[in-house]
Image 1 (cartoon, rainbow, N blue to C red):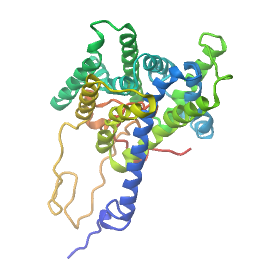
Image 2: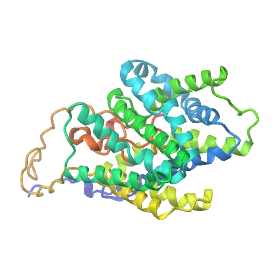
Image 3: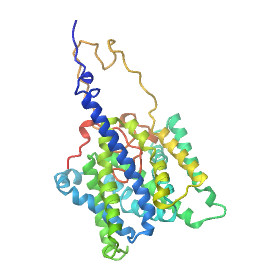
Length: 383
């Protein structure tokens, strides 16, 4: 009898002790990422009552990652400079200063639940619209149901402010819709740049920091960083600079690599629920029944929008199948595949349908809890 070695059954294989430890670490990284995403929504709401102004928060958001990752970004400078201008513009506009200011101002006019639900929740809708406009076809049935639930949830959130008209809430909701649309543009741009998570952070943060710095220096955007309370500066430095700007993207890439894209997207879709729960003790917000219904509908919609079109049945261990030799025979090397860009997207690029390429504001805000599988060889957190 020919003995075959199954790497999964060894003590250091994915199903052994080392594999279980890696999955546990991935789940911890995923949990931390979801908390950071929730922190973005909460900080957007809290900015209005702090001593910081939006420009100050943006300087911390984009400046801290540049400072921490400076050596690693310097080593990637040629790769970053080689990115096509059109793709770089999508990244810089989609998650840069326009997105940040729209999200912060929208959060100051609405609530943390609105930020946590509308910004990441509507991204699949906008990405699907961009995909259809680009001729990539319509989403499959489950994704279509998910997109319908997302739209219904958004209506449930805002309908009570239509009659009588609440100008502040509607204006804030409109800004959050703009932020979500920009984030969808960022998601599409990330698919085109082909950088690892560290390089993508640099491509986003460098032009954003320059732009917000110029706007602050010329007085176009006021700043109060020199006289802000130290506690506020520390809070936004940790949440926006280190958390959203730096850790979320790297942690999520690690989670995808260790626990898988589908499980990551399922857990990530719970981010709006966490925002609502944390906003009660931290910000004193009391969710209304309409908010609860809207958040749950959007969460369910994001989950469905990130589902694969179908699942494969695992092949038998002793029956040859396409691409898988029978036990005891030498495996045939698979054909080389074109590298997929390292991006937050819910499924591998080879099987992604229009509604399933949304990202999480995580490699940035990641507020958008819907990333995708990233090949092992392309996820690099080398700093």
